[in-house]
Length: 61
Image (cartoon, rainbow, N blue to C red; front, side):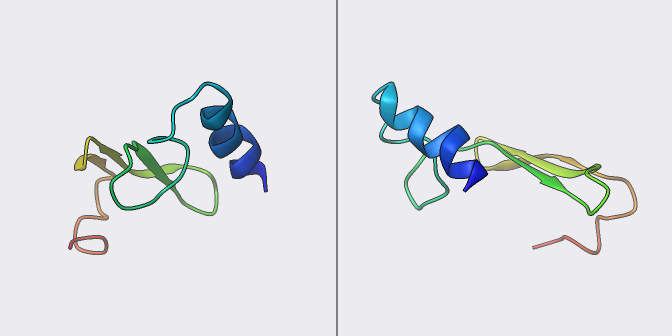
């Protein structure tokens, strides 16, 4: 619900149909957080921009 309010609805209000949700063909930069809300990885323009040291093997494709 929170993601919808902050992202999907906001994108719709400003007319950005290709943003605001995670779906094939849409633009998105993502941040993966752990249970302590610490950054595990970031993905920008479809590429992993950051992967927390020590997590390389755990999160490899």
